[in-house]
Image (cartoon, rainbow, N blue to C red; front, side):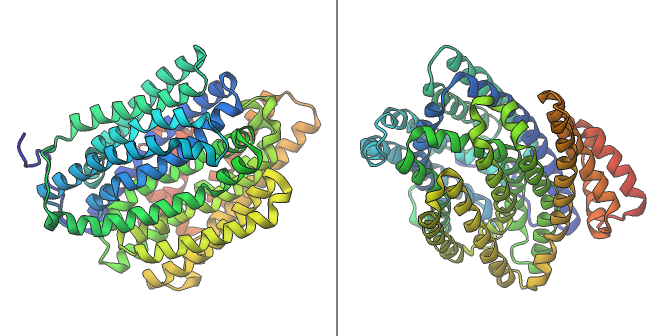
Length: 523
């Protein structure tokens, strides 16, 4: 195969208008894909929660900690380096692919050998064969990572969206549920992950052909490794900090408790984290293109923070209010012990998803050492909070994580002040619209829910009323509250999206745009 890329070379840094348009189009496709997969994930979670036990979810969640360790170092941040590098050559692509495949093989073998030690360390011998099977996924990831990174760098998010949705349907809806129904237990979750990786490999390379010829040249590797190595270490430490709660729960109370905690977290992680993650996938290539233009980067960060906050925070706080009905509908009455845990985790995700944009700014501007120091400080604070609050059980662990995330938010505000050269008060003002809207949405849902609960209304009616109240109150408050800057931004964003195609919320978004457009000018 030729050593030259057959795809179009990445464009030069875009002008403000074209970059904004490309970012909005990327957000449109990633958001549509996210909404589609989130709806499918809701159904998948509901079905799997009834076919599997908490222990099944717990053992796979524990294995995932080891796999993420291998995943971070198997890539050595090469996928991030391909996106962030200002000028990319065919040799860079060959070097990234060679290292990804080689490191994937190495760490897959290493995890295979170390799996028994992990089983003994967490007193979970059943995790060993799970790790053995999932280690194959590291090899598959090493093969498809370059293709996916090139698609992101070129901002071909429509293609990525189609690949993600199709692989999700086939792996989760096909392989996963079928295996669970046939009685494979935790192995159905393993089959889901491996089948999706295999499909990503096939479809990713089919649409982004690149050279697979090995390249061994330190001159080419050096800039990629310098950035990618720090990125990998910082991201791994950040991930491990996020997994400290699960490791502590597994050690203190076992796999069943971990399964209960992880299912409670997943209910809000899907609509909150997944929506924000899809936006940050657009943010990294967009922020990287303007990494040397601080005013444009600062504006992009503040805009992203404000627009995402007015969606994510109301969802999280509204879900916390509707927790009893949400848990009963999605997981079943046997999971009601997860309600107080779920409420705390909702507050946690309202902060953690917002911090993802600060993380992206650090990646785009190569402030990786500062990011690493911040992460290690956050981890130390988390461990101290675990010791103080573990007497309160799973809720205490969740509270410790929430307080740790509040500290992390303060740390990132200070860091963004330095990196973006912006006043701290300006950064804090970006949170104000989200906080006001969240309080209004939560109060509206609480009022409706309390009335229906007092009237002993059936569960489906209460849950449907809570969803409808949240969907109506958010756009209504956006219109009524004195937030002209936010209203202009929302109108501009909706004007570039095909809101009619958005599932469920499409008519609401169309109506909101019509109400805002006459009085709002594009930013």
